[in-house]
Length: 74
Image 1 (cartoon, rainbow, N blue to C red):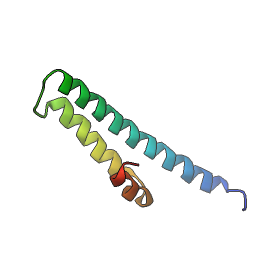
Image 2: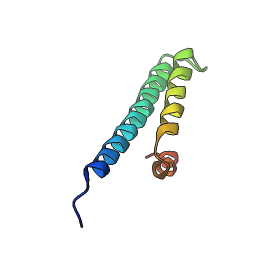
Image 3: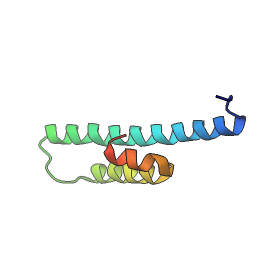
Image 4: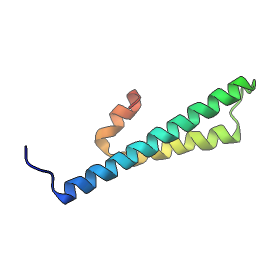
């Protein structure tokens, strides 16, 4: 297998960054959901909506080949 070029490495690095942003957004949403559930909150708060929108926005930025995996839980 040939050594990746600088351009390929740059693409891989950017893809990894986008996946990390998406995973962090999902983790933040899950943590907030757990915290709100523990506090007895049963409606969508402004913070929940903000974090949910961050997940949606991060998913839109994922490269096409990662979007299907994101739907399954990446």
